[in-house]
Length: 112
Length: 110
Image (cartoon, rainbow over all chains, first blue to last red; front, side, top):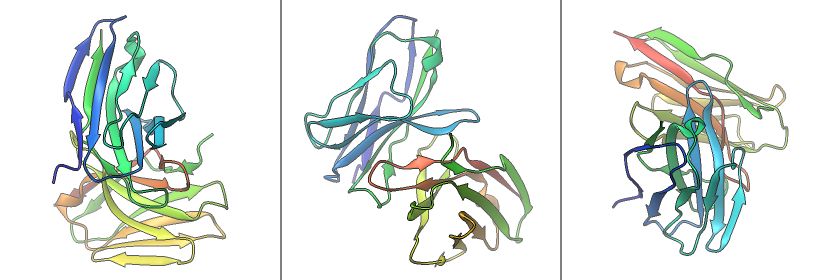
């Protein structure tokens, strides 16, 4: 029972590089979301999706793109990495609103 | 503007005593709250939830209290154990994804 799987676990990027953080869930959840965690800032919502083909912006969407072509996958794309995007990224899924969300183990990203 | 506020960044408690973590919210329409626990290098894990139709929910050593008139909720851990040392987040859940507070780091001292 895998739950929410994020890859990679660690990544170092140079400023200006692009990359995709992968997230997959096997619980047939409709809701998926991406958060970033920074010291003293808690967990801030980047983008989310309430079903395949539907995405929306969260609190801190700038510099990130998402798409949701299947129920299982919700990749997060960094278009041109900046040092301000150094953070720990978490993907989460839930059946719907007003239910608990399940989180992946996180991706620690460093942009130099 | 923070919708869910945890005003204490850290808390230290002796093993066996009660830990009380607090959370305030701004919108009286919020009606479902959750607490998450996070260990270093791991993702947050769900701990306990409460809906606004209740003022208390218990699960073993963990109890969440909701005071709607004060827009305040609290998490009580009794008795506290060293394994409870972690960061605790309160969150609101509506028709959009969870909105989190900034977290409180709990240290339980043996």
